Length: 552
Image 1 (cartoon, one colour):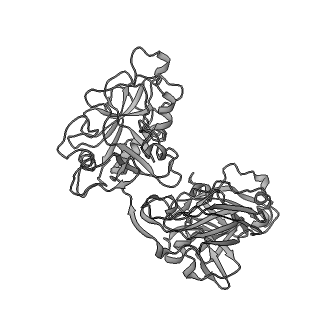
Image 2: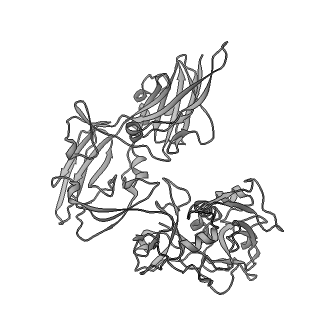
Image 3: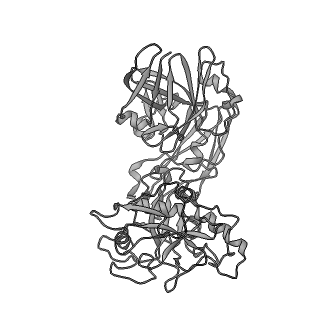
């Protein structure tokens, strides 16, 4: 039996239409034959939703022609996952729910397990991946993907709330088969099992759309003028782009779905979609549908160093280094990817506060009047190694768990209730060690300390970094980069302690370290231009500053 080990290269629909894919060398072994090398590619494609009637392209920005039908496809994005099964003609089972993750370029197993292709085997895949997939849900005797996954498909129901990319994609069950499509390509071709309602509304979108490099246009933020005309829906529909008046909603085939809402003038509209089949879509046009010519949109691509304001608008850092006017909250310091585990369940990223909470004296975590058992807080995980520190991902959870039981009083702090940021972002919190490490690496840091190294009392640096700036051209230090980024709040030559950059104390984290939780992680960037580092500090030692973050 011939065996081929394949590196799974990711292809979205866009990649299929406009670009190619890098090749990787592989080794092929055949029984009783010498090894030889071959170049091969693997891709995952979406066959799309079909409409029975062609729609003019000028009237439908999300549709394309395919002979006598119109098709709408789904683009695979960073973080997408599929599950793979395989079985031989003789009934020998190989893969059982092998996970493959799309990293933007390649499909890989997150545990490093290679993907093998064997001639004579059938390969089936489904999307989205379910870690708890019940193997009894598949029929190993069936030759087609629809038959193989028939029980799983029958029991599948789309979520009622599909308003975010995560929720919509979690509802979009696709299944398909895989095989060699030519001499050097292995393809999983997935088909949709649910039906799709597609709505085109006569929206007029006028204002700024904030686009995030690692996210889709569905996850953009808006700052729209009063001249905009936006439709509202009672149901929680998915809007694939904040720049267009298109909406989607997935339904179980054959089930009727009532859709209702109001147009910009307050008039009520409603319709019931019936008899839409799996892999099919029905299109509904409201008030003539969306026409891009009626919108006036300014694209704003968000970047590290931009300023988030309390009314949730965003501005670039002034190029001349001047301060911003208005109620600025902080500096955008980490941009999240799809399903990012460091952004506290929020979509866009993390903001560090413009000013330090303690400007004139250092702070410690706890004081002698607190009971001994609180030194090792039961709700916090001890993080003795570098890897443990990286894996502590939620400062907000840490701070909410600690509450006011420690000497810092409240580790979280609310925004003013009159500001929009109070509704749209998390409370202020002290970042976890993992979030501080993410900040450092975003700015240009690379960890040089072995991940399995345990922090030991008596040494001054427990996590060391090399630093090559991603903020400015040239060889600048992190300290200089942060002074540069914080000019919307403080001038470059300012050295006061109310600036979190020039505050002489270490930035505290909300992560406990070793020694029964009596130590916490702190992080430092030095004014002498040395590389930043992390260290453990005893909770009763006054060495820290309170530099808060919020997620948005």
